[in-house]
Image 1 (cartoon, rainbow, N blue to C red):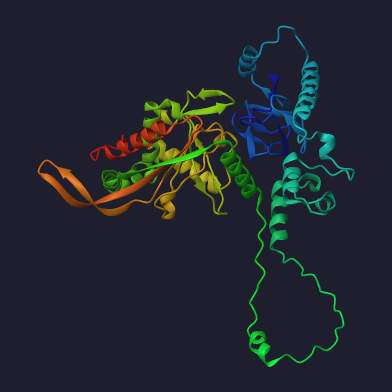
Image 2: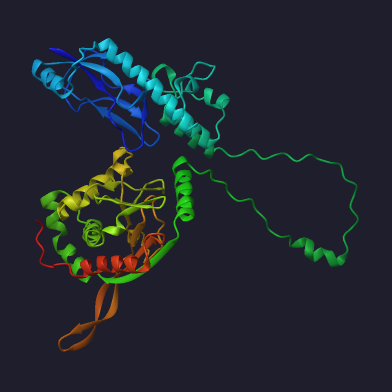
Length: 452
């Protein structure tokens, strides 16, 4: 038997700390590796943290509401001899420091990290800043939402919480905001001022008075937090990157015929619907391999060429907002793997179950606007990427078909592809060739392709 300190794992790119929402497991509980043991909040998502080892949860080193740095100890787990030995090999302690010294060192490092982060970013709050004079604790995520929604501290203190010791959770605050926005804004009563009797109107004015101009006040809808974030990022993208868009029209007949032929057997064999999205992603990945300079980002006067091909895909949420989960290393999946990944990310996006890692490190983005019946569009680049592609609706059209016997007129299934790119680093030649290559791969789709 041995005790192992479990540390707060990395929660995603640029996330240095998170807030403990609640512990799912209690001291004394038997836990297995990868069991969810606590729920935390970051500035992006709420997520559950899995156990790093199997054993018995002996002690909690942080409590609900604590702000914890990534890498800091959060719990002690009693593990078996074999697992304890493997953990010791993985993290040797040649100096023979005690557990108390480790905890003290981690605490000192946490204080230093917070001071450094605070000096770099005044918006980062310490524990003292998240606990007002009333003594009620608010997580950084709750304070950020309150600031965005314009909720003052006095109003925040009156909102009932469902967390431990009546702590205000993100869901409590979002529910309050929704209720707050649905309440009608009271109209200001106009002060009644006595007036002297007006003279009788002239006959020429009667007709004009009988048909006054009809005016009405507009309905006011307050942006929610996600919509505000989207708005800010879109404005920033248009400010940073000079956008250029190229278009091609693609013959999707072979792809559409193949999908129609295999969709039933695909669902039966893999338990997943085969949509057009994974086929489109596959074509984009092949084109990125051919034109790696489209898979870059800009850092000042430097161009960073990405080695991984991480494709983000825009997903429409029930609220009407969009979110962009990422298929990491998309070039390592076959078509079946892409279909499963697309289905999984889409479901979890609409159920609000995405993690911070699901949204991080995208290098190129696509948007299938054809699902909304749109034939083409000019998408805005998701920074710090340099390009984005939109696929329009597939429509049956008369087209000229070239054959050895001569040209014929036939019905083909056509689709417009829109490619927006950052003209600072992507010229028209590269941007145009890239979208044309995607089109070429789709038009050369093998209609006899197997599902394997």
